[in-house]
Image (cartoon, rainbow, N blue to C red):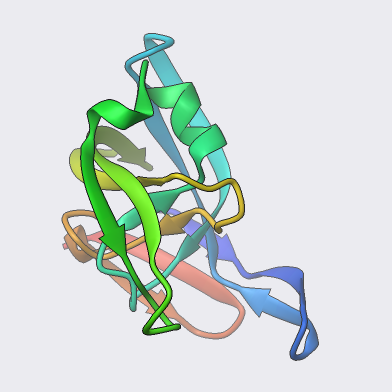
Amino acid sequence: MPLFKYQEEKSSLFGIIKRPLVELDIYSKKLGKWVPFKRVLADTGADICLLPRFMGNLLVEEVTTGIYKRIRGIVPNTYLNGFIHDLRIRMGNKEFTAPVFIADSEDVTPIFGRGKALDLFKACFDGNSTSIEEK
């Protein structure tokens, strides 16, 4: 399975920080083909995969046909509205279907979360790279 080098990004706290960003493909029901996503945060604290709405618009005909949910994360009293869709994801040679929360917002980071996605893999984060292999 792939090895992903951490990528440097701006941080309001630390100036520059290295983040475990991975590459994966998601099958677009709308376009009828795999769409590559190059900078998705591998987040072991995230319950679900998450995409901003503009990315979701590439994958499904109508975002609002998914299951409506309100989720929250690091800020306990702040909610993010969106719609859950079951999407086909491919990482390396492994293909699987996972629930993906498409946010009703453009201002969120794409996240590769645990539920039926990152949990399918054995991941090692060492501060410089992320290695991911099938369990």
